[in-house]
Image (cartoon, rainbow, N blue to C red; front, side, top):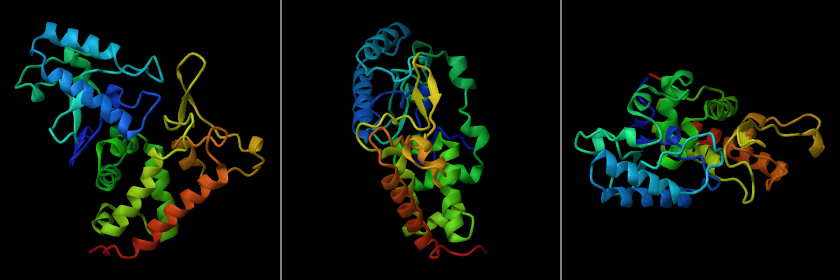
Length: 267
């Protein structure tokens, strides 16, 4: 599979701990990435200097939601426009000098690791996610959540009467509607503890799978949108109203189906 880390203009820093924070909003993460990028820009390209800078940056960063998940302070912006995230210690960002040993992982780990999405997503599913998302923040949230991608695409397919394919995103209105559906990942109600998708921090700080207790909410039959709601961290008892959430998911799925007919047929 084509790499998901830097793909078709999109980039992801999830394995570097980008989303391991209590505030996952775009402004908060953008500010933190900018802080690191500006600081490292002035650092001499030597292991000693980079280790010292990494330690200082880590000490001034936000507290992680999951203490056991490492957050690398060497993740930042690769371009002046601040649209692509990546490793600022990578040789491609330093004229061939490799400083990745100065981060929270060593070079061997960074070179060998691929997130599970590389094995679980199909090439077409990955291409659809990259085409629909228009910035690093949403792309990273979506591409690392295989269950969410599949649940969203399945919901559209049921309504449209056909499987979503990469070619369908050449139709601008459908691409925009699918982007809005995926944006559920970053639009939770304020105060929700569901800011890390399908997981929440347990008593020991380790990730714990979230389950919506429908019976406690007076809903014996669960929700037809359970897979999507769980993936976006929609705990109705924590700042989100279940019926309102379901209505929003339904609206966005219907919006995708409404413009799906304008996509060009195969062949």
